[in-house]
Image (cartoon, rainbow, N blue to C red; front, side, top):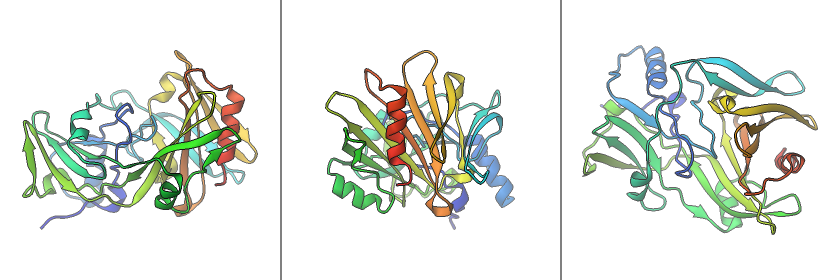
Length: 291
């Protein structure tokens, strides 16, 4: 009899774009499940969980942090926390998922077993929406704006679904397929847990807005602070992070807002060749706040 992974540990989200970083949380997930369930699991089976969202990598509360950066609400509660990894706890090497992605039709999802590496990955080929009305309808009440400010217009969007992956030892491979050293089994898409939306203006500037719903503990484990200058900025009553790479012109802002099931983690990346002034990027973020 198969046991489904408890909802608290269903951290696998679909991959939005292949250029984004991924993170292997094998040890953290397994240790957490063992502590919660009191059962023994074989650590030889490695889980690779793809949870990339607009260049953010996070482990949904697993891991141990050496440093942290926090944003606060006016009442003193934490709205978002960025945490760095202790030495030896960093994300493992990334996988090239392009081949896996090409094995899926648009709207399909699967669990892949990379037999040579003995690693598992949950992956979805999310549908791309060019029509804003259709995309907003799929997202629901937390849909992004059609326009950011007076100049940036919606171009395309993708949803992020919960893949509801089971533990590797409990997957039923009866209906699986095998290609070379890759075994995979189709799985249904779960609930919408976020989205990715792109915007552009008439001058060629490009922005990407990503959102993650119900982020566990409002925490993100990331290595970004190792190569970025992190600045806390006050926008009205909301605190946000402004981040700029120390070795490039890349810049982005991030924040969290809402309570309970209405909580959303937002991130706005400047993908322009010629970057926006810092103040303009923050102004675009303010347009999203409270949406």
